[in-house]
Length: 455
Ligand code: TYD
Ligand code: MG
Image (cartoon, rainbow, N blue to C red; front, side, top):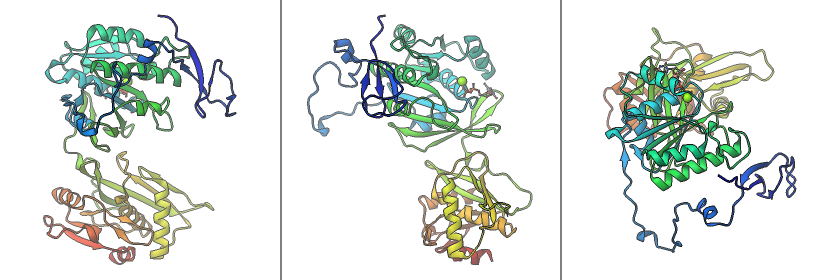
């Protein structure tokens, strides 16, 4: 294959240059030039950018004239994965799955391909591990592997050649960072290579209707390595997260053109691969023998599912001029804000205290329903008094000291009642008209009421 012409493009201003330079000649930005494939004005060149348009010239239509193609969904055979995908795999869709090394990306996809419904043809392309290693893992999973086709290859051109021959309905590229294309001279793993390789694979998936999984590595900062541009080239972005040493692993959709985002799939890593956790609402609760100070159980919503997690706080005399504010699994700025609300509206002074807050089990809580649990945990640790062990809490706290309602109040309360909790502390506007089980629900509307309740 002839080498395509290579150019360099500035990521700031888009200017193109025939040679790499440290500084962009147009806008003067430093270190912004990266390699791109030059667009050639031939039929083949245009085809690279054809997208959905096809051959015929596009015409303008009204939206109602457009017939939505019936998207066929294929269950992957792993219910929790189907859940985050929005109900199964869509043909022609491209799913990027990111996560720390060793979290279980390869294991999950191998399991999914093996269990794929109706014996659909699947191709697993491994660029990181040898076929022997993959086979060893498959054996550990203890499932028949006759149907699965395997290819150890990193060149995108050769992968696509094989894919055209094999015509798999589902293809996995493990990982996109090892893939490289002949069109570019830069090294595999570089931003330009990752982007161009992914573009070629995505094009193939769209043209042939192959469902494509791309495995992506995560940088130390926790974002997908390579450019963020990968995230908007694909239909679905899944993140694999969880405690490195822990048993539980979660797959979260952060972008999904075919389903809801923030849906969570929960797995446990076992000796025989990943096992689905179908009812995860209580797995993150550590059962203390006696109630301990600084611990609060909150009900958080993960997508459409309520999940009970423990929020822990430790408040301790600080030796520092600027006392520490540390959060794990929660937003850091939110803690500073909550402590300010607590001081201003409750008169609780903690400026000489270090405050640490942690969500147990490696869960990340990003919703505001954690406000009230965080404040209660902090208060409980500060006063060294435990809260009742059969209590659940949720609610948002506003800057004016008001306790604001959160979505899905009833679902949260029902789940807590189902798991045997007897008491709930919730925003007044979240109190349901009828009772929930035999849950004793206490309504709060302003922050000082929290202090009264705790007095
Ligand atoms: P892997 O799936 O290779 O992770 P990734 O592709 O995200 O880098 O490995 C997951 C880890 O899980 C690995 O450290 C070994 C472990 N593991 C088990 O505990 N049980 C198993 O059955 C398998 C296959 C792996
Ligand atoms: Mg892997």
